[in-house]
Length: 154
Length: 115
Image (cartoon, rainbow over all chains, first blue to last red; front, top):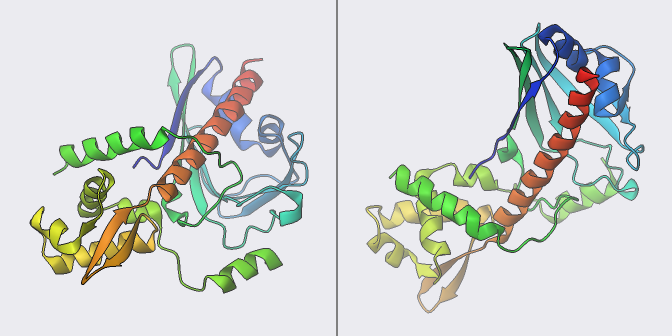
């Protein structure tokens, strides 16, 4: 079962410009919609307040992992069960964590960004995330994937 | 730790097996593929269908059952195992929602750097 999210995006901007946008805490805050008060430092936890409308009560938290200039920026972050106000969701103790990686490489006329989020296998079976919606039919597709995986890897 | 979370942990003191981790094994994937095709099966039926020993199958079914992917019930002298789709469906949907959030976030990054 696929447990990595990967996104690729071509950006019409130089690599140094993109690097600054993702690693400068003020710029990051603008497009990520989080108010941060201190620069990112590898090995340290960064915290801020979400500014996305409707989620202003949520605290953003991440542990900065790697900052390899203009190539790789990564952090791990917790996945809260819920962002309901009543659930004190900003208490992330014991929440499953995933690894987020931004990789940059130059392409003609701009920068290729590859984002991956991995480590979803730390999420336990009885987890009931807020975003959960019932959607019949998804399973059939997933089973085809499992079957083809098993067939290809006997 | 909030009271709600603490209560949940107290109510279910056993460590939870993990769905993706439980599926990160070819033998268990094959057992799931076998069980999800329909009928519940006993350990001996599953052993007849594979090269594994009953003991190995029992061990793997234990991992899957702790992750909630299969459930068992006693049928006469045998235990019957059946597939339980819900945990996988829920995780799959959660990943889809995280993926969608990234699409929106990265679209904001794109307009931020290209302006």
